[in-house]
Length: 442
Image (cartoon, rainbow, N blue to C red; front, side):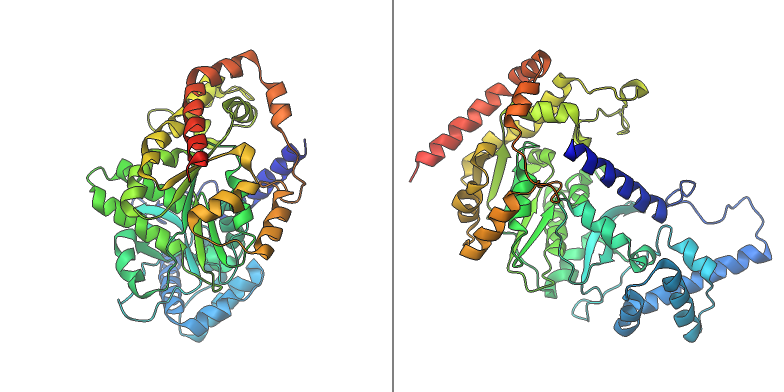
């Protein structure tokens, strides 16, 4: 009940953020003016002011002192007034209406950074990956020294978009240029990757690791997902270039902004299908796979399905099961998705860089097995902080953690048990056998 209440509040909050940033009638990528309409004097003036605003934004991105003035915390109206004043002071013809309209999608200014020159995006992180003219680009937003402490990367992104500065400024970099551009930047190599079956404690592990101020923890970042699936939109992308893109986007996320020393990434559950890509890009980085009794995971997804469980049409759009409100996704479908995510693990586990962790081992496994596997020393103070984090609900940290194994087992229907047994039981037994064997090994 507490989880449902928190989730409802999160949904309302998220929807309000989206409504504040985007108009329903504004389609991304559509031209501001139709070619079929004869421009009026007013429309030409609006277009010219938009171009003037773009030029001012380009100047601001290249001028650190101007950026600092615009990033100061203030409300939307105050920010718009500040943009207009600073733009007029520098000879740009900009008005409040033009700025407000541009904040709907942001000014997508291409960053032409000279290799070896000053880096204009200090304190910025890639928050989106978007396709423009057949090329994948990274969109940056300014976070400064704000730590990524939300349970999921997207939560931190939504908070950063509450700053009107990030609504207006949307610098883009072609991902193919990232490796070269970051070559002179301090970036942390990842210490470990967290893969998971789903609903099995991966968010808890990530939140525990994030308690240390020396750690950067990125959880299910959409730019990483976009790169993982880049071949869907660019089939001729070579394996080597694909790996370079993945290396680049992860390096961009691993820029230390507060003197951090360690960098961890938690993946989407279906990213196990791309383990060969991750191993090609990061052959020496250790990884873990978290899993749980499949009955408990199927029950959880049945009552509150994640986006990976929603059936898709051939064009990738969601199939809402005929549009019936409250319709449940069949347990068989859920179990098949979970099996798809779990099956590759045993195959790639043999290279010795993986570690299998059962939900039942948490939270002690974080300091007993996971951190040693990642080659990270856990201090006494870190353990105290992680223990405190484990007492909170990982997805809703304002609530205390409540054990749910018994409730999920009790709530399992014959259909959910049958689905779990049919598609997942053999995989689970295989993973358990491998895990127990590793525990016996010296």
